[in-house]
Every structure is written in structure tokens, then in C-alpha cells.
Amino acid sequence: MHPDLLNYLACPKCGGELRVTRGALDNGHVEEGELACQGCPARYAVRNGIPRMIAALNGESARGADDRVDLTVSQYSAYQGEVYAPMAESLQNEAILKARTGLDAWDYKDKVCLDAGCGIGRFSRVMARAGARRVIALDAGDSIDAAKKLTDPALPVSFVQGHILELPLKKGCIDRAISIGVLHHTAHPENGFRSIAKAVAEDGTLSIYLYTRAYVPWHKVASVPFWQIRFALWSEPLRRLIVRLPNTPRLAFCKALYVIRMKVLEPLKRAGAPGRFLTRMLQLFLLPDIYKPLENAASNIARNFDAYSTPYNYNHELEELVDWFATEPGFNELRVTPYRLSITGWKNSAAAPDEPLRVTLHRARSIAALEADGVEHQPAA
Ligand SMILES: C[S@@+](CC[C@H](N)C(=O)[O-])C[C@H]1O[C@@H](n2cnc3c(N)ncnc32)[C@H](O)[C@@H]1O
Ligand SMILES: [Zn+2]
Image 1 (tube, helix red, strand yellow):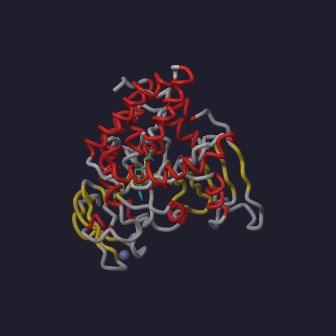
Image 2: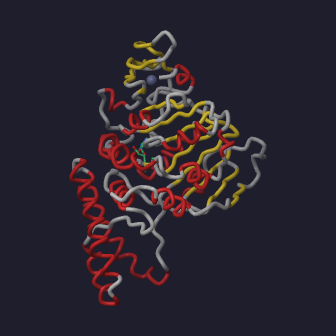
């Protein structure tokens, strides 16, 4: 743990200052040790150079902001550490981050950056390589250790195991905060948004990417309640059971979904009207998979494993995210990118307080095309 990190860390319980009480080396770094809060009795372990800032990881009850934190920490992180890490670095992560945030590489130069829900840290490394002063890579899950392992120690990235709903950071200390594909996996996405927003400094930015609700064509709107009932009574309860399976059978299930897709559903769909009808009938009972025809097997299986590993899997509307920004003090400019659902909010100190919220749309190459380019370089699983 770089000593510089103490300038940004705060106790997640009371917001108090932290002090190294065990394990400091001569250069101030801590590999194995302990941090103690100056405002309350809380203590946090440092293991593998990473402060573990979640009460449940320090022998306390997980009940609080999120009583399913254990599933995020272990089960969901398996996706990051085992299934996703091998392919993540070959994706066009620079271009993907730019498309999602509307920010350029130079926007990170000399800035203090936060990657909230960093997974295996692919975007933390992008910001560090772009010249960030310090990047705080934060994740609740065990994937934080995988993130550290994948990162060149010469880059200014500090790793923190922390929970977004009890963010272990001082208020207003971050210039560039990103949270890409994360808040919809937390117990309370709006609270998570507000928690990160408070850490953003004046003239700082916050970039959020959320899963969006599936688009329903107008001629199918009448049948939506049926799909909602099916979701509430069938697919979501089963998904929640599957999330609790150990990693190996869960991965096997996700591979089976992919095999059914490729060997049964896709050939049937091509077999004329009766085939398409049969596909629909089968899909009434099968659990939903995520299938991107342009991507290879490994990528599609990883997408399934993501969807069946997280305890929470919400979907959001554009209006909802705009509303969060509009009602959070300090944000007066929103940069919307065409890839739903991503927005960068700016705390622009030059804007007058009564000025209307300014919203601009930024052009960017389709993310689907970018990601397909990236994963095509991977051998099929
Ligand atoms: C879909 S992954 C995205 C990872 C990364 N941002 C990327 O795009 O590669 C979601 C990540 O959010 C993390 N996460 C979920 N809930 C969290 C929480 N409450 N606090 C911090 N991280 C959380 C998970 O552990 C997981 O690594
Ligand atoms: Zn405290």
C-alpha cells in the first residue's frame, strides 16, 4: 500500500482519518498490516498491499448497507478473476472507455482518479497509462487481487477492497471518477451513485455506465406484462438460486446455455416459420442467456457467467440516471454518449448556480463494434 493512499482513504463507518498501526515499512509502504480509525474503534487489515475496508472482511457482521456482500466478494468475483481476466486485456479498453465516458486520454493527465467497481482493473490501467497522478482502483470482490496482479507495479495505481455503499474515501478528493457496469450490481444503485458523487471534487467528473432495460418494439408492448410476470415468477427466482451455486457448476451451467443456443436455438431459428415458432416456445421455458452473434464462445460464456453470478442485476432508464445527476448538488453539465446507458457529469464551478443543466450528446463509435473487434482476436473456447 502506497503511503499516498492515506490522503484519500477515510473510515467507511464514521469518515474518520486512518493511521497505520502495524506493518509500515521504512518507505511508508504497507504489505501486511493494519489501519486504525482515529474517530471510532474500527480497524482494517492490509493484506497483499491492499487495505480491506469492508467491515464483513474484518470479522464484523455483513448486515448493514448490503447483506449479500459475501456473494459479490466471492461468487461474482470469480467471473472477473477466472472467466473474464484472460480476455479483458485484449479488448480495446482505451476506445471503450472513451466511447462510454466521452473523455479523452488527456482528461486524466495529472488527475486523481477513482475506478469504482474496477473488476480486474482494465480501466484503472487505461487512466494510469494516460498520465493520471494516482488511480484508486476499488472493488468489493476478491477480483481486486487479480487486478493488482495484472497491473505493472510502476503504474500509479492503488488497490482498495471497498464497498461503494460505504465508500472508504474522503469527500471531494477525486477529479475523475468512473463506475463502469457496476451500480446495477449493488443493493441500492441510486445510493451507490450518491456515495461516489460525494467523493468528486469541484470541477471533477463522474462517469457512469449502467445496464439499460431491454428495448421493447412498439408492436410487442401489449405482451410486456406477460414477460414481466415470467421474469418475476420464473427466471429471476431461478437466477437467484443459480447465483448461490459454487463456481464450477455455475460455469458449467453457463456453458450449457451457450451450447443450447448454438446447437438448438440458432439452427431452429433458421429453419423457416415452424422453426421460429418452436424457438419461441422453447424460450418460454429456458432460462435467458446473453448472446452476441459477433462475439466468440469465450466472450458469450463470460457474459452468461456475469449475469448468473451477481446477487443484484438491475436495469435502468436514461431518465433515471439523468434525474440522479440533476438532483445531486454540484453537477451542472451532462455529457451523454450514444452507447446506452452512459453519462459523464461535470461539477463545473464556472457555471452560475441558477443556470439550467446543460446536456450534450457526444458521438462515438458503437461499443458493440469495438468490443466485437477486441474479442475476435481471442481463440474460441
Ligand atoms: C461487470 S463488473 C465491471 C468491472 C469493470 N468496471 C469493467 O468494466 O471491467 C462489476 C464489478 O462491480 C463490483 N461490485 C459489485 N458491487 C459492488 C459494490 N457494492 N462495491 C464495490 N464493487 C462492487 C464487482 O465485484 C465487479 O467486479
Ligand atoms: Zn471510524
